[in-house]
Structures are given as C-alpha cells and as structure tokens.
Length: 396
Ligand code: CTP
Image (cartoon, rainbow, N blue to C red; front, side, top):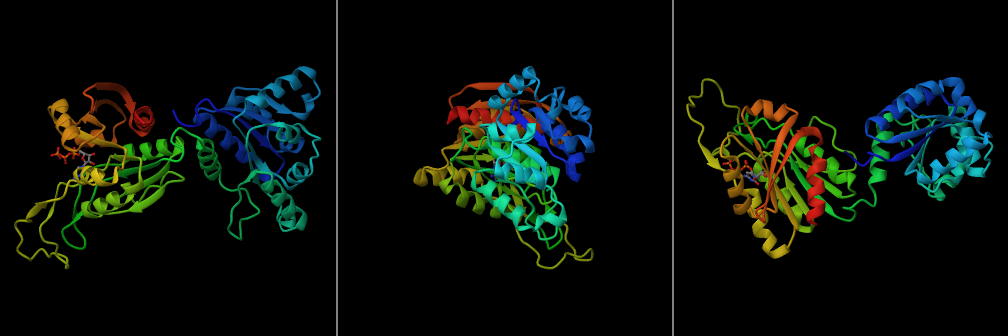
C-alpha cells in the first residue's frame, strides 16, 4: 500500500518524441496500484500504439476517433470527475499552446480543461521552439493557473522531458499533500552507526536500512515533513525527505536531539552501536603495531536521552522504537518499551541476523505502552512502513 494505491490518474500523451516513455510511466503508476486512464492525441497515436496502454492498464484508451460517440463521451465525462490527478507526459509545444489558449479541439485538451483534479504537465519540446517567446509565455500562463509544470532546470536539457523516475516521484509527493500527517514533522533514523577505530576501520553491524527507508517513504506518502537521519550513503533517499548524514552513534544522537525539538513523531529504526572503541587512533593501525585488544566503552542510549529531553520540550509527541531479538522476544522488547519510554516498539525475531536484514517476509510483533500486543504476519520488509505509519496516525 502507498499513496498511489487505488488512485485514479488520467494520463495524457501527446505527439512528441518522448511518447514512447509514456509506456514506462503507465506501468510504474499501475505497479504502484493506481487506476490509469490514458488519453492520446492523434499525433501520439502515430508514435505509439494505444494497444500498449490498453494492455498495461487493462482499461480502455481514449482518443479522438471515438470522441463524438455519445456513450464514450458520457463515459469519460464521468471518469474525469472521479480523477485524483491528471498527468500530461509528454506535453508537446502544440498541446501547451492549446491548453494555454483554451483550444479544446481534441479529447486530451478538452479533458484537461474540464477536470477538477490537479494537473501535472511534463513538456517535451522541440529545441527549435523551446526558447520561443510564445512557448515561454504559454508555460508561464499555465503555471499562473495552478498547473504544475515539471521541467529540468538545467540549461542543456530544459527542452526535454524529465526522467520517468522524476515524474513518478513528483506525482507521488504531490498526491500525498493533504494527507493525515500534513503539517506534522516525522524524524526517522536509519542504518547502522559506524564507530571508528582508526581512519579506515570501523565497528558496525549488518543493518540494511530497508525498513527505515520504507517508513520514511510512508511518512512522506501521508503528507508529513520527513527528516531522515541516516548513515546510509549509497541509496537514493525517498523523494521529498530532508536528509541529515551521520556516521557514529554520537553524531546520530546530536542530530536526533536537535531534530526532535519540534517534531511530532520519532521512529528509531537505526541499529545504533552499543559499544565504541575507547581510544581512536588518528593514524592507521599497522600490522606490526602490537594490538591484541581494542578496548570498548558503551555508547549513550539515544532514546533514553530523547525521553529525558521530552520532559522539557514535550516533543516528540510519539516515539517508536525497534528491537531485533534472538530470544525472549516479548520479554526483552517489553523492557525496552518501558525503559525507553516508547509509545510502541516493533519487535522481530532474529534467528539468522543476515537473513533477517535482507529477507522479505517477516512477522512483526508490536507492543504498545498500554500493554496491548499486536502481531502482523507476512510483512514485506520494503513495504512495512505503511503498516507502521497507519498505527502512528491512529495514535495521533
Ligand atoms: N537505540 C538507541 N540508542 C542506542 C541503542 C539503541 O536509541 N544506543 C534504539 C534503537 O534505535 C531501537 C531501540 O533503541 O529503536 C532498541 O535497540 P536495540 O539495539 O534492540 O536495544 P538496546 O537498548 O541496544 O539493547 P540490546 O542491544 O542490549 O538488546
């Protein structure tokens, strides 16, 4: 489940070169659970077959040929009013011009002019006309009417359609506005902290961060301002989130205590190191240096500090912790729930830590501060954020 699930999206395709990419846009929207109704101009149909979209969406594809058939007209009129979003991608210079000037001589422009839902327009312009004053004015006109125009700001590509990935990410974020967490700030910690031994060696753990990513995405989908405090560097962050990069438990603690001062929700999925080397060597330790033992000292418990700070700042309103346990799951998780002053804790069983970090299907046990215990079975790790966020929204 995500913000696209069950949404009705009208996808307008016009006759410009990037029309072939509309097939990928459609399949990504469908993959995310949206119902997509495709509208094609006469020129778009010359470039790509409507059959492709019919197969991907499993739905009728609308074009000018049937526009004047009474039944069809009635049918698509009804659909327009149910729509959550209209995306026109690619939008040719010709369609921009028609839209800006109210020339509704085809099914696509007519639909765009009559829908009540927001519109995202993704231009794909011929280099020869992209700098023309008429094109520039048309775009400005459309923007001033509240239409979202999605274009690359880079000088070189500004005439070309932005990537399919950008279109999907932008549409997703756009649809999440007015969600149940609108105006709320959610802080999510993700990844394994790294405690330095010397400039090249660290003590860390196997946390993959998949769960945290999914929670941050779910917070965004619910319309929250989302701050990701993470040690993970090599994965694109969920679009729309603010990112604070940290390394050690100490840095994570500082970032968390600062960010939660005005936050509504804190979700601590990070696997924070419990121990760090007592002494950091500023020079790389050499094989010849006779070190048999690295002395360790305990790190601070971040959630304990959050609870202490909350006494003064009253923030965050809700704190959620995670616990991976290899034995006595309920007992151990319950101790953490109380000692860290959490609203709930998500516990899972770790029989094999490596499988657990990368594996998909899982059973989660949620222990609430009030004493209730909830079991969620068959959770897809990369999708579990939605289930957790639903519970947070209920608590709020
Ligand atoms: N946590 C924290 N600060 C730490 C260690 C953990 O805030 N120094 C948070 C984690 O992000 C998680 C929760 O506490 O949300 C439980 O983490 P876990 O590692 O299971 O618990 P620990 O308190 O470290 O206990 P132990 O490792 O002994 O089981």
